Every structure is written in C-alpha cells, then in structure tokens.
Image 1 (cartoon, rainbow, N blue to C red):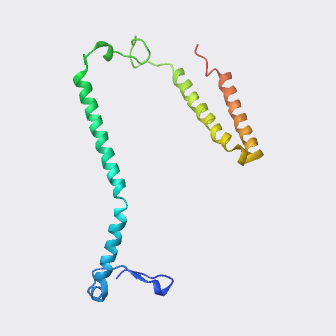
Image 2 (spheres, one colour):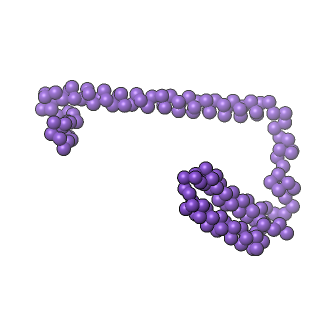
Image 3 (spheres, rainbow, N blue to C red):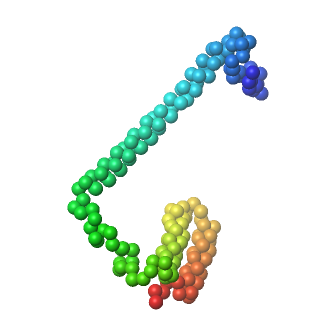
Length: 162
C-alpha cells in the first residue's frame, strides 16, 4: 500500500491501490476522489490542447494550400531564370569545389556580433534611473571593451573589401 504521511497526523492522505483490505475500508471512494481530481486538473489544460490542435491544423492547411495553389497557378515552373544560380549575382565560372573568399561571411558575423552587443543598450537605457551610477560605470566598461574590439577588427582589415 502506498501512503504519504504528512508531518501533521490529522492530514494523512492515502493513495488508493488495488489492495482488497484497503478497498474494503473506503478505498473505492478514495480512488474516485483521486480520479476526479486528475480529471479536473487535466480539464484545465483542455483550452491549451484545443489551441494547439487548431494552430497545427491551420498551419498544415495553409502550407498545403499555398504550395498547391502556387504550383498550379505558376506561369512557367521550369523558367530558366528561376533555375539559375543567384547567390553572388553572377554565374559560376569555375569548379564549385574551389576555395572561395570568406570576407562576406566575416563581415556578416561581425555585424551580428556588434549588433547584438548594441542591443544591450536598450534595456540599459530603460533601467538607467533604477541602476544609477553603478549601471553607468558598468555600461561604460562594456562600451569600452566594444570599442577596443571594433578598433582591433578595423586595424586587422576585417572590414576591407579589397
């Protein structure tokens, strides 16, 4: 028999099981109470479950409808312009397994890094009154490190295209 004994003896709760002795002494009623509590608890999640089902169904319908209508109403699905390479703006002129210049990716990664660091300024500006001088000094140190990193990448030539 599973049993949870509270530190307070008058609040001892029994978790019913299928023991015949327990069932003879009010186990069925306890089992019904536990089941009723479980059903009541699960019914609280019913709106969220309905929302997830409707959202999944709507997303599936819209995806299939958009794909099907797009394929059906396209003027020419095998258009040469649609099938051409367009990543760099010009046709590939050599083997695709050649070494390539990574400056575009380097600049993109540096932009993302500095953009994310600058994004920390917005919550700081909103909370400046509540954080006071300590926050001002901390942001000054943060911006100092940011400026040192920017000068370093500028001196290394990471922002140069030639």
